[in-house]
Image (tube, rainbow, N blue to C red; front, top):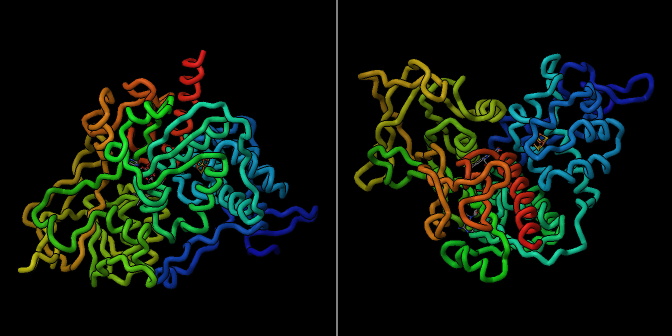
Length: 479
Ligand code: FAD
Ligand code: SF4
């Protein structure tokens, strides 16, 4: 045995998984204990577990997993390197395609990306690609191994707006090939949703996010925080300052509300505000002054990953927490893993339920939420069965906090202050899928600002494609 009951040492001395069809399980904090703290839930693999998991790889000739990864990591190569214990080589393989592997290994929806197309998926559990990627990135950090960077500069300046995964990836890829890149970030710290949205217990800030941002800065990328493009500086001014191209990776940070009575009451939060207070402004820590209302009973409206993060945060702040969602568990848009974690920790799911009014006391503080029961009808345009209210089924849930987690859209500040930059009806910037080109000369865009709220790895893929587009654009201009 080598550290885990699912791992054994074979007669030839190699480390193997006990059952090649089943994932080597990953160790996690006990649900009862973790529901009371903000420490990371998942411990990740140790060396033996990582080698055993990698040994399950079929190493098939026509590896489909690479196509499932928007930044095209050479997955079969790095998995073989892990299997052989060549962790430094595995890090070189991964970091040549991704600037944020410790982050993606933790938060990528692998089940629908690389692991979703994995051939082993048909013959047993898919390989835990994300957990292996996380292991390699964490190992490299412990050894102080940095990704390769470029020492030769080409003299061309590029501005990047936003320091989320799209901006960091675009900036890192351009710096790697010699560009002089500056990121302009509205907040006082870089990282975008990685910092202010995804909670500490899923994505530790000091131990994981900060070091990967530092790696991007070590490649030569400069970051100017507290700079709001469209307010402190305009895009046209960036061109006047000598930037030859601009990448917009400003995300989709504007919360959506339901428009029901009582939504302006005291005690109603958008999930974004609630999570920002906790993650960026550390309200959960005693040594910070940031105020947060810890309700006795909290109702979170929505069923996506953001809703799961808000509920699990409220739970850790000591509240009883209910999720109100209008369809059934099968339609919950959140990752299955996140739903499972929320349930284990004690979150109560009120399914087929929709809010119709937020109830308040005389001082306009939340005292409850009025809901109606729903049933599922025929599939709608999205293919999901349409929720229909059941007449006369209204009921009330007592609560003192309501958190709205219904989605977000791009903030129109940049598009409304930049002449010639086209957007669609949802205020998303229109950009070419292949290279991020927008309607405005020299301006490229990608990530949530273009697609609306999506995922870290899709934003990174868009940042990567735009970096290629910008390089081609500047090279053609310089001819
Ligand atoms: P963002 O990460 O939003 O970054 C945009 C940056 O631009 C921000 O730092 C913002 O301050 C800055 N900015 C905006 N306007 C300006 C301006 N005018 N001037 C200067 N800077 C500006 N995805 C996953 O894959 N897995 C998950 O588990 C997951 N969980 C999530 C949990 C939460 C709570 C949320 C909110 C999202 C989650 N997502 C998850 C989605 C994912 O985080 C986003 O899709 C991704 O961060 C988008 O990256 P981006 O770079 O486009 O934008
Ligand atoms: Fe899979 Fe995401 Fe890693 Fe790509 S970055 S290999 S999609 S976990």
